Image (cartoon, rainbow, N blue to C red; front, side, top):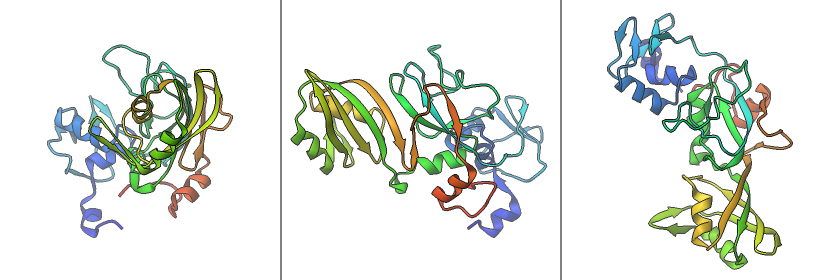
Length: 253
């Protein structure tokens, strides 16, 4: 529930920018720190600044519109794209390859350069942050092709969690689906989805990941979505899955 005092003062600008799809709340704070955000023509100095309807806000000199209704999209990310808006190394990005006509979007978490499959995209940075929280207990499920000798007992032991190079990973569901020579397909389920978690844990087991395909993120499935395609999640389904009563907008906590 919103604090009555906050309602009276308005909305924190970092949260406003996140809901407007400019960036995640954390990245919006970076934009503010870099002096790239103005409110009524003056540079914003703190992300705790409050804004009200009708205030004129710009980022890099461009006006930011009032947040639209919250929208969520399923995207079948191909391998070879980075999940960022701009890449300093000049590599192709997810957002450069999206079909035309979409609103400005941010990703829910990331898939690394060589990973593929389901990536959720939204025009609401606050929703993105909410969907990334481990407290949701949403399983990220992958199909993983590996090279090497698979030890099914070692896979089963991952259900107790594992520490790799000082990093503790939460319990992981992992099972062998098929094997052909030195190659095998696994199904792997994660609750946290830390950076390069699947590849690092598989390497710890002596397995080289040769293909990584995310097939589900919580209740949202890749299904038969073609590679490179985008499909919007039905607003009714979105509300039901997130337990929302408000029909137009998710206002992250």
